[in-house]
Length: 514
Length: 43
Image (cartoon, each protein chain N blue to C red):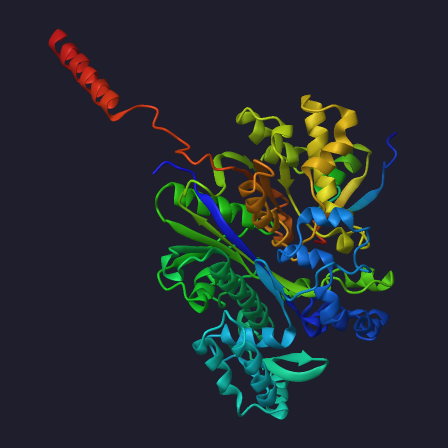
C-alpha cells in the first residue's frame, strides 16, 4: 500500500436553533450573569431571523452545497439583507434542519435518558422525523418515551439544575444533569455535548447518502470538534467519534477524537489520510458537530449595528477518506505545512510555516496552487464585529509572501486574491470554517477539471486554553487523481536481493581478511 | 528615552489581527512594562 488516500465525499449540515441562541450561547449566558437587565438582552429577540430567512441566506446555501463558493462573488456585500436564488432546506450534500426536529435528534442522540420532550411536542416532532429519509424506525422510536412529560414535569427538571429546551420561548423540553455534584456532567455541559453529538450524527447520516458508502464498511471515525466529555476523574476522556458513529450505524467502526481548537479538522484529515495510505484502514471518516456556546457569539456587535443575529445555526460536517480508487482527488500527505513550537505567532511566520515552507519543500510556487482554503469564516458575521474579513486577510498574507518569493508581481496581488481565494461562507463555529467547508466543493471542482490542486489550511488558537501562548496549524495539498499509482517503489525486490547478496559477500570477505 | 518609558501595559491581541505576544514585544521595546498579555478569538 503506497498510494495516496482520496476524498470520496463530504456532507455539510446546519441546524437552525433560535431559542438556543438566547438560552445557551456563551455571550448571552455571560450577559445574564453579569448584566441581567442589559439593553442587549432586551433587544436580542427582535434580531433573531426566521427559519425562512436562514434558508434564503446565501452563505448557508453554499454551505449545504446548493450554491458554489464562487456564486458569492455575484451577490453584492453585505449578504444578510439579500435573498439567495435558492432557499431549500435540502442541500446537495446536507440540509438546514429546523429547531423542533433538532431537539428530536438530540433525544435520538442521547444514550442516558437525559433529554426529555413535552409529550405533544414530541409527537409532532416524531411525525416530522418519520418523513425524514435518513432516520430509521429505531431512531424514531426513541421519541416514544415522552408520553409522561408535561410542561410542569419539565419545569421541575429545570428547577433541579436542568437546562430547558424552548420553542418560541415556551418550554418544550429539558436536559437533565447527569450527576448531582460533578460540574463536568452538569446539564449545561450535557446539553452542549449532546447538541454537538447530534449535529455530528446528522452529518454522518448525510455522508452515507452523499457517498453511497455502506456504513458497515467504515473502519474508523475521527471527531475534530471543540467540546470535551468525561467526568470529574477524566474531564477530557473523549471519543465523541465513536458515540456519534454508534447512532449513525457504523457498526464495524471504532474511533477517536483529535483536538487542536480550530486547527483540529486539518490535523484529523491528515491523520485519516495517513491511516488509509499506510493501509491500516480502508475507510476513515472525519466528522465534527456544532457548538451551542458560539451561537450569537458576536451578537452584541450585530445588535448594536441593527443587524440580525447571524450566528444562529449549529454546523456539522463529515468527510470520507478512502483507498485510492483512481478517480477521486488525492490527499498529498507528503506536501504538508506545520506550525512548530518555535515558529512564532506573527501572521507572516504562521503563513510561512503553513504555506510557503511546505510548497518550497515540494518545489511548488504559490501560483501552482489553484485554490487556498484557510479559514472560510463568513465576513458578513466577522466584519461588523470588528474581526475583519478573515479569508481575505489570509489571502493577502499568502499573496504577499508570494511576492516576496518572486512567484508573482506586487501589482498582481489583487488578481491573485480573486483567482486563488474565495469569499468565506462558513458560520463562526470555531473548527467548522477551518479549511473543511471547501473539501466538498474542492472535490467537485477537481473531478470536473476546473482546478487541479488546492491547499487546505487549518489554524487554531491554543492560547484560549490558557496552557500555552502558542498558535497552531497544519496544512496539506489536494490534487487531481491521475488514475495511476501515485508512487512507485524506488527499488525493486530483485534489486534489494542483489544488494543484500553483495553486502553478505562483502561481510564474508571482511571476515576472511581478518 | 522611549515613548512608553515608565508605563505599564495590558495587551489584548486578536487571533485574526495582531496576536498578544507580538504586541507585547513591540510595547516592551518602546519602554513599557507589560503586566498582562493575552490573545482573544472572536471566530
